[in-house]
Every structure is written in structure tokens, then in C-alpha cells.
Length: 402
Image 1 (cartoon, rainbow, N blue to C red):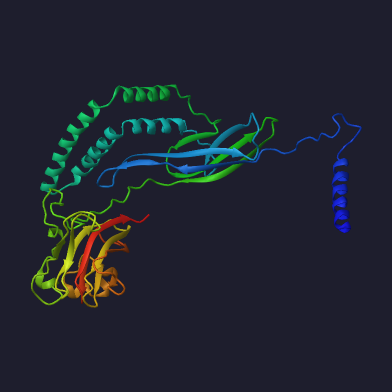
Image 2: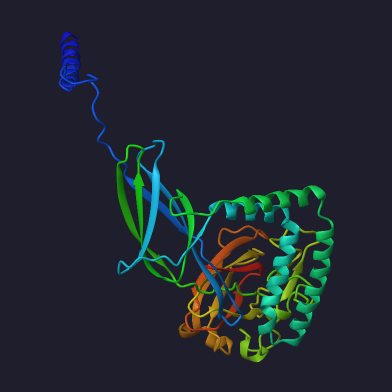
């Protein structure tokens, strides 16, 4: 114990001597040292570029906006910020737009007040975007009818806006009008770059003692590209009347081009059967699912459009009757596959998944996923077949993998 106390005393004495050595009785403000610590600047940024392309992927416009936020290691009053920009060669860049970040916030608040109206406007815009590139007259007629219906809904939604909502919107719009212009001295700002390319972004931070430092980063502004559209899987849940025009028996989109060519057993009908439930909530989706008899004679086939070079994830649910050992296979095939025999060739299989009923519970659905790349293909075939035990499929969905 004495040894421990002695060590503590020694440490304390050493610390005291160290502090005392900094004191000079010959100086004013004895014990005060000049603070040589200056600011160490840093900044964060994020890409908030927006753009619009037509249905042929032709760029209509693009705003190459980036959000910047400056900071330093010192939390002192009077800290000043100064931004500057050059191209990759060091030439000053001045033809950019500055945006007050509060503008984006206020615009979002206005959209929140007008949520119903904005949602309908977005639905109309989506349909108007698709119409110029739609070749199917039946689908075109349905979309035009939907727009007419949505325009009536929009008129009703606008008429239903309350005085309180309209006043809130007016208040936000007044705040937008009163926003100060963004400057290169703001701690936070949004910069709209003139075009894609590499830019060097400099930040100088000066503290209230006049000390300053500078930091820089290369910011690569990438060319805007059209977003990859999500493919449509028709009658994905095998429900009646779920086609674009309100028709369909849940199976129409899943029929093979030729029963003889696509039959696993060499002939006869290949059309999937439908299993129905009396109420929703029992199946993964709706009240119908696709049924595949245990003899393996029925198949599901649907060709869908994809974007070359994109990667996708298809999900679906399966269930078994558990009367015998069985399996369910779902494959993604190249569009040139023209028969069941060709569907077994490795060259035609882009991706495939086989699930057995080992350990499964009768009529209990389990979700699966298949990831695949479109490659050079503009379409692929979803093909499903079973063997050994009666099986069901339900609730197909597809997403673009980012």
C-alpha cells in the first residue's frame, strides 16, 4: 500500500512540476499560454442529382446537384467558411448555381401538405411518360382511360383541400420567397455543377482568432443515366381479373406458346391449375395460387421484358401437398428457348432454383429468391415445373438489384 501511495505522489508531483514549468513570473498574465491550435477543416457531400429521360432513354434534362456540409475540429464562434471550385486541371469554375438547402426542405413540406394531390399528379405523369412508347392499342386505350379518371380524381382532391392546408402551403411559399441567396460562405449549401466531370472542391475555414486552413477533395460528377425500369410480371399472384384491362383468369399470362413443345410428359395440356381459398390472408397474396399436379404435367411460362446489362431479383412463394417426395423448379431462360427439352440445356438457363419438400409443412408457403443478370437479353422467360408431389406457387415479384 505504501508503495502504491508513493507512486501516486510521484505522478502527482511530476504533473505539478510539468505545469509549473509553463509559468513565467516575467510575463504578463502569468500561467496563460497562447493557443496555437488552428481549425482543421473537413466537409461531407452527397449526390442529389435529378434527371428525366423519355421512354426511349433520351435525356430531357439533368440537374447535377450535390449537397455540401462544412465543419472543423473547433466549435468556436465566428468561424468562417469559404468554398472554391476548379476543374481537374485547376482552372477556376464559376458557372455553377448555388441553392439554399432550406429550399428543398420547404418544397418537401409543401408536398407533404398536398400529399393526395401530388400522388395523383405523379400517377398521371407516369402514364403520360409511357404513352408515347406504347404500341399495344388495347393497353393504350386503358392508359388513356386511366388518365381521364385520374384527372377527375385530381380535380376532386384539389377541391377538397382545406383552408388550413392552403394557408400552410401559402406560408411555406412565403418562406421560400424570403430565403436568402446561397453564397460560397455558407456552411451548408447545394451546388449545381454545369456538367459531368471531375471537380476539385476547396474549403477554407477561418476561426475567430484569424487562423485558417484549407482542405480539398476531388468530386466526380457522373453522367446522369436513365433508371432501370422494373419489369412487369402479369398475373403475378394468379388472381382473376388482374390483367391491365381488368380481365384474366389468373392463368392467361402463364400459358406456353405450344403445349406439344413445352409438355414435360410429351403431350396434353400444360396449363396450370388454380387453387382457391375462401378468404384473404391464408395465401401469400389474394385468394388464388397456381397448382401443379403431382404428375408434373403442368408448367408456368411467361416472357417478361428486361433491360440489357441490369441485374434482377425475382421472389416467389412455394408450398407442397406432402403426399410424396417432390420438388419445384423455377428457371430464368433465354428468350430463344423454344421447348421443354431446350429448357433443360445449360446454355439456355440464365438462373435456376430447385426446392424440395423435405422438412416442409403441408400447405405452408415459403418464400424463395433468384438473382440473375439480363446480359444482352431484352427479355427472359420465367419457367416453372414440378415433380413427385402436388405443389403451388404464389406472389411472384421482381426488383432491380442496385
